[in-house]
Length: 171
Length: 322
Image 1 (cartoon, rainbow over the protein chains, first blue to last red):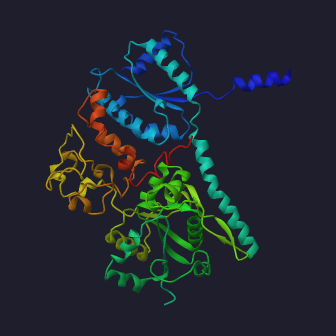
Image 2 (image 1 turned 60 degrees about the horizontal axis):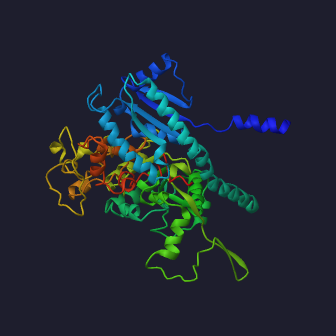
Image 3 (image 1 turned 90 degrees about the vertical axis):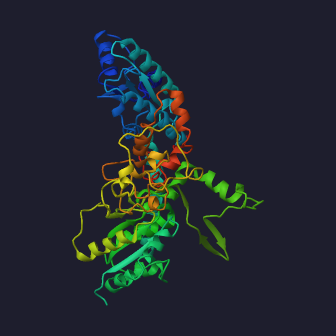
């Protein structure tokens, strides 16, 4: 009984995807705001970062998010032709197309990076996109780069202790 | 003699080009030798590890270490040199960012060993013999260095004081660095001993660089001729200049070839590959996914192009093993 309860509890505390979301100020962030005001419920796995434009999302931000433990990165911008700064979302799209290739050749599934056009009035699309992305990333499982970095570092530490051991012998 | 500062050179996973750049000092090397004692330089002089071990901790004034770290032997040697040296300089692109050897991080260790010892066309190895790390011969143990799974830049293994960028660093930079060290006026720790501005700034074709670029296709220098007067990037060739530190004097552009980024990024950039990807791709003219992909196909190997020297030191570091 107790054991069942324990597994149930730890089961409920199981891994949940962490998704970093870069939403543009003019469209997608406003849409997420609308979703909130309209009390639309969506999965709570996204951490929204407001940027002025999807064109402001430097690929370095995305790689940084992955390397610090994000399981997915979602970028939300204005529909093509609607960018507040005219060209920003196109710039974002072009970088995105190439960055997907780069991350997948470095072993990160390209589905972990997603770009969506969500206009200010599309509160419900926020729900659909977020829920769908969370479901897909749950299927992929954790990316867990910080854990991997620690594992990679182990091979060097083994030698450290070996050398320390040798020095003791010689001393 | 005894008061001359002691200097050590060492090489790890590197091609030897950095050693060559020391020789490239030409007659200036006499100036270096006049002012310092080279106490360790495996490629040029006959010293052993035990010679280094004899020095007191911190007795060597400067160690210039080139090459990435990818084996147990290299790790052990640089840790030894770190202990014995006051100042450690990561010399060249491999020590600074992993360099070309860092591209091995695109593959698993097993993939690499299998290719080298079994599958490559020039290999004849029917019994699939691989070198052993430990082997008993005539009753005693023989050891070989172990290959690590990850290629690392020097600063991921030991504490590094300064960086001399380049593949290899230019003799001018080396000479300036030696002068700075001899003057005793040391720059703040972590300084990259090269100008902190993009290569375009010292590029002889700077004036022909348009304010707005719009790529309709990407060309490759092995298939198309490069106009020797015009900005190489504006002609549609991938030139890493905008995301690369200056200091080389735009040597490659001078030879009518695009910059490949060996000097690494400036201090404001964390990930050179991501930054040049950002800059170049956002200037593609196409606006739909399909059209964009067609243009971007002109860059068949984005990791090898954008991260040619910096993969091991980049944010992601290595292909994530699944």
